[in-house]
Image (cartoon, rainbow over all chains, first blue to last red):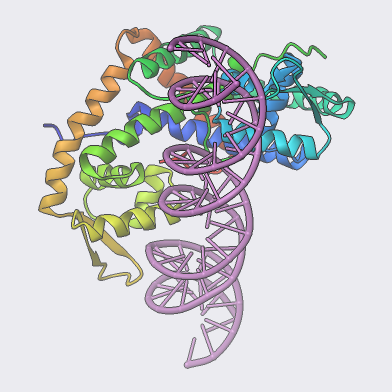
Length: 156
Length: 156
DNA sequence: GCACGCTAGTTACCGATGAAACCAAAGGCA
DNA sequence: TGCCTTTGGTTTCATCGGTAACTAGCGTGC
């Protein structure tokens, strides 16, 4: 059994390092400029795209834990970026919608997010980026087959 | 400002999801079969490869927080998988080495780690994997330029 | 009509995490 | 020598995250 194991080439390790450094960098920017945590920004992003979602629909779309979504929603409600309204047909469900202020913040944070992503990918080839997405797709499928629950988050 | 932002194609998000699902899956296995957390296994891995490291050298090699390394080391010492010995030249430094039992566990966990990684990558092309590593390299460099501290970890 | 199980969402609890404070030992440097 | 900064490493503390337990409402079978 070869003992020459190189942690620095081990995929789970590399992924973890890259994801965490990225998360922290983005978290810092979101937080500095908008006072949003990553879960909050994610919820805002999906509600911004698909209006009238329920919290559990957000859970599906973001792959975040339901507790984390619940907390993020509470924070966004408290800050007046989201509003919610009980569903008439199913009284367990609360539908989420952006407020005017929520839309404003969303519109301002989007370019920041896209800009950071572009900066991160600057200098990489289109082919490599395509391969990356293919591989991440494959990984997602594999993880599901291997019985890894959803769950999406590191430190915020 | 297009509002059609697709979170599910946003790189930081995808990275985070993939890394966290992977970490959790691996953590479960390491923990079930060896009672090791991911930080512990990482420390064991680097000490297994480079003997006689100091804790701060481990920090550099693993990109983990020094506090986390400190805790992982303590746990490994307590379980008798590592031993340490003060450096003669610099009395602040404690050099880490594997015990016989540490080597045994290391030897048994390695195939598990490699096997899981292989399973994760099953069905992906060599070219895509190469692209992935290229991209992760580029990302690391970019992150450093963009002022993201090291830091490596999500939930264990 | 009502007992049972299921889903939406929240709360409670506990372990993990990391920033910052801290201690001890080195290393300039005057 | 004495001071001041830096580094190795641990401890503290506030925060975050997830599992599990809980409440409320829906729906099915009988």
